Image 1: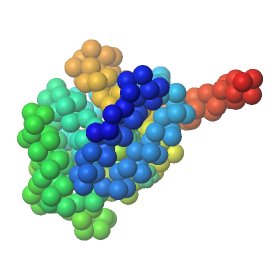
Image 2: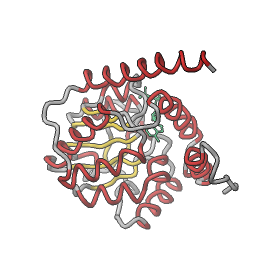
Image 3: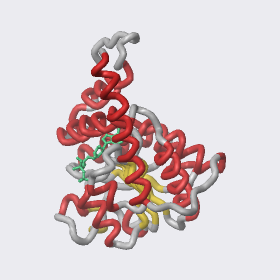
Image 4: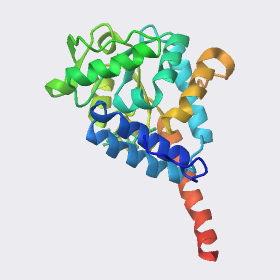
Length: 244
Ligand code: ATP
């Protein structure tokens, strides 16, 4: 990892990028692009967990706690950036974690599963035996006892097609996605518009019963509130920039 001075104003962001780059082939090239897109939306949010994100976190905690077979679907970015938090969340729910990749290769799945084992959990995903209907072959692969039979699936950083396919399969889907306009954000039942590593500790606290569960939740309305916050932020920042 390159040396990043601790006093750099974007220290945390640079460290995160370095982590993804250092993961080499475990992260698909498209994963790096997806991260950049997420960062852009985080700027618009002010790099903070907003009120609507807190409400979505509480709604997600309610779904996960009441699920019969909850599963966390983990891709490369999720595991490289947040394996310990994913493991902790899986233990407190409790839920299975399945390594599920858009660009699947046995080498990548094995490497990412090893990171989750190091974090203390035994993941599914290395021996896929179920196909999600409506998706092309490699992207459709998953495990019957994991995503296949899950009633609630948490998909941090999912692609829109697969999110839609999971919804079509009758799953309750929770997404974590900084982009409130993405197909994933709009298709999921609960979308947490927040940065992955920032919201996971809050989700763990909510699942552990230390936060009040949100029962009345409307994803569309909540996404509209997030977009409104982004607009207000841009409108208030603009005059400040003009003054400089
Ligand atoms: P869709 O297919 O859902 O319309 P997309 O083509 O942008 O969206 P991907 O390229 O798979 O889908 O990107 C996944 C999403 O993950 C992006 O919308 C990005 O904003 C978001 N994202 C990336 N990194 C993070 C992060 N660390 N925390 C939260 N969200 C993130």
